[in-house]
Length: 309
Image 1 (cartoon, one colour):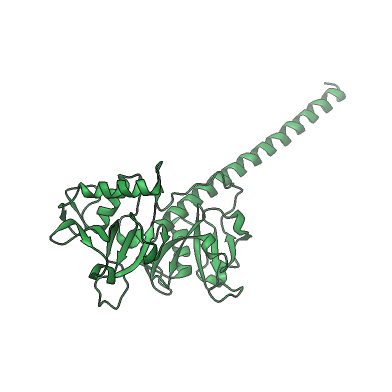
Image 2 (cartoon, one colour):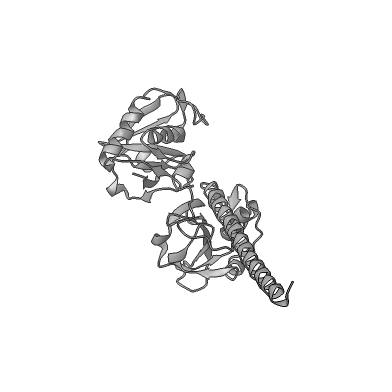
């Protein structure tokens, strides 16, 4: 082999090895991005699965959660260890703007109008985040755009370069509606009417129509209209848009406490507003039934009203 031939082969070997190294780096990056994507989706789903759980300051789960503790819990469940206080988490990872949020990012807010956050949540995509709310005494789902004046920052804990288009997370409820909200509300009421008289059973399975409790009934009739709701009444109360009594419309979900005289606003019942001053719901011996709503104990037990259509 001549010296010239040897130099040519050496040059080719260097080029090939360099190319392979670069290609290997791309594979490594792709693997890292895939892992981040999977973790992001897992964290988002874990956060959503906690909707309706109780709020308690500093509680670490699994049935009660404080603000930072909820984030720590879902990250740990996904195999990622993070800090356990709002102040520490606000210094973790890298800063992200509100416009570039991805599922799994931590979002921080201040109720005092300061730059130092005093509560936080987990962003799950679709402009939504999950957090343990002291005011609502539960883990709830909110649209982040409703908190613009309280938003102080966001941090990305997971590495990787996944894009918004690549990330997807299951929303708290899905609507497959192709009709107007009014028509959809009529369909929901019609779905419910066919179950009039069906027996009430506390804790009834979501997979049966032979019996219902209040939330399995609403879940069923909304599902038949193309809208998927969480299972229990407290979880259902965390989705959709809050509306006032004066704006009540057919198809709205009305959430109630245990009794008129109850000192707690803990939600124990849900009903569907059917229009004409009536609600369609199920309870006790009558089972699925229409009840008068205005100027009744039902009205006086109302905690909140949500619209999901």
